[in-house]
Image 1: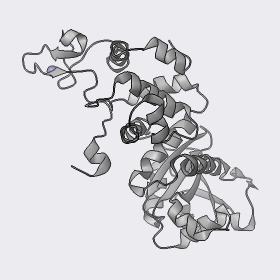
Image 2 (image 1 turned 120 degrees about the horizontal axis):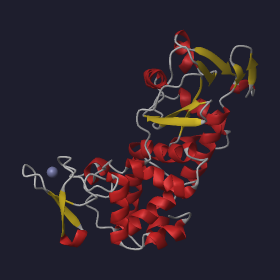
Image 3 (image 1 turned 180 degrees about the vertical axis):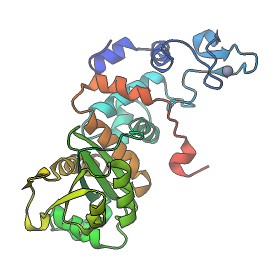
Image 4 (image 1 turned 30 degrees about the vertical axis):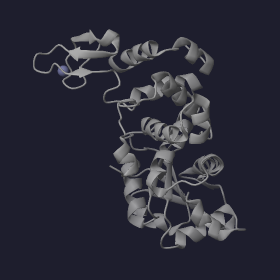
Length: 314
Ligand SMILES: [Zn+2]
């Protein structure tokens, strides 16, 4: 197979080899009708498309129907390169850069990147059983720039107290697994935070947070321990809960902020969750190699994101 981008391009240089790869990864090599699931199909149009052999269906389809690549005029070989790049670049890649790298317009690259981020979403992960670190921050730089000259923590504190902080982001890290889940909210309202923690953390688990009052009401469900960031306390020891800190989530914020501010500059709240998906996917798969991450992300190819959903336009 391939171990790097050069080998990927050499292994799958044309549309046929890319289609064959999709057939293998999507259907285990057995062409299957995406409309009815029938496993006998005719090959038509020289292998570009197929026709379902079930008399009740007889629909024509290609391997990209029902995937993120559906109805795209961009050749699969360009999609594959784009997918490799977005998964390999630790800080992300801008639509401007991607467009230049693969030879499409910036607008096309922007749309491709959002579809690829859809593949990077974690769906219904298991609840965290042992220790969860929880912390929140604000990604919308527009609001952060109102507080020039203050430290990152001081800005977070100010934003947490303002009424309309668009773009609050909650990070919940599974200490044992070393993974993170990241959720975007319009603001840091108590009910969003509570619901998100309850959906992701098993009742009775350890909950490590900072001293924010947001988490106080969760103390009836969890064994909560807080570090006092305002008093510059980052780690404390607890007999029952071990080392108390939220350093894993904080480290993730620093990678995501460096990426978002350096690569994407300004992101709108509407798309914030997709950026969270992108950064958390790479973080959670940081121990595997770039080419393995490429293979892994293809398992989620059946997630379509159409233009209307993405832009709100018809
Ligand atoms: Zn069919």
